[in-house]
Length: 577
Image (tube, rainbow, N blue to C red; front, side):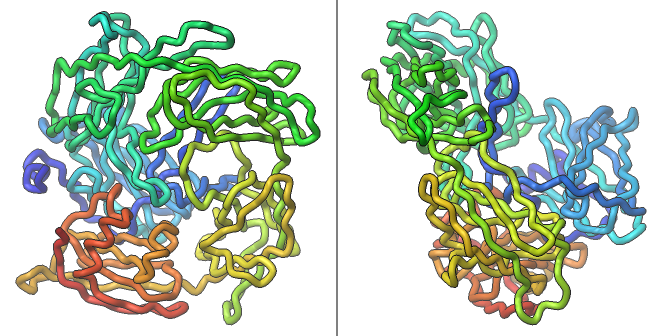
């Protein structure tokens, strides 16, 4: 979809705001939680490098104001009850409001800071302020103390619509089948097929309707959950199926959805398959039957695969999960869902249609990691211990997470104690210590900031040292086009010359959009050697992929950033093949 077409239909977000070039915060990790009542809540995310924000401190307030208007791009008519959100690290939590009858909104009592503003409603495409094309980061607003920023306006275009029916092998309708438009996204350094927008469920006659789809190309998936339980002898089921009717993703066809376009009669006949039952026992580290639930969660390229229902572990520790289609899974338990012991067990399995019996899941207690926070040499001042939150995150996000522990506090003497599951984990700073970042994490003097630490079951680790700094690097500059004229709309990517660091995520990879002066600004990169490249357009879900960066570096400029250094670098717009 060309930029010109987006401009023509009104996907231009006007206003007189001061714009800064900072990408919107990445979404949280993929997490599967079990709330009260036993329902499964799946929260897909895109870039899991940023852990959940801690909201224990009260939100900051100020005297700044952001106001604007939301209208329909095709008619110019105001959109009432549209949802507008403002997000900023200074807020420590997002704020949301709905527009009035004239499509107007106003956020008051905002502290100074950099803000991402987004708007959406029903069948309209959700947009960030400054976004000109689909899957492009918006332009955050830099708001000064007591400043009133006006005309933060949105012209929302109608999203695409896909309708059709899901049928069984006899051509009869299938109800309660989940349908989703999917596209590849970078998740923790790995390219995965993820839902794009809201999934839909088929009704009693097999009909589905997907709406508010941004223009682009998508795979359409249909999944009927095989909730076969316990000793059910029926092994018939359906594999996750992609349009036009294949269980093999390599044979799937992509659908091209245009702006406001409706694709009708997109029908899929689900592929039959033999399902399997998995059974066994789950015991804790003392050999006693575990309490709680066990679940089979998918592993693989697509995270919309079929998973079995959560199964209650019986008093004798036995469990049985049926209706599992062929594929790779992780069996995972959490005893009592946050009980006193907090033990959990997991096991990777691959199913080919045959039952698997006699599995033994052995629980382990959370590992305990303790240590001390220090401030880097030469840094003036120190953060309040109460403002520091530390949390472990997996080094590789290759599967959903089932439950898990939250951020841990730092004591008044700057010591800390955190719990984590077994696996290779990386320590993250989750705030709200604004302006501070991790410079180094060491275990008994060994640097583990990027590599993380491999926690073994029932292992406790001490002598961790977390070094914080507020001396951030800053890279800024102007961009010109091939005629030497200043460019006003572009994206800059800065990434390390060391290819091994590309998989570390947002710590070494940054993208930026220009401010009202046409200047980009990238802050917070660790000292080191980098590439920088300015491009006309950057897809927010692709630019972190190693293949993309491989193609970009041949036309990129070299830049070295020293500790706390502010450097200027002007760039020329480039293209990559």
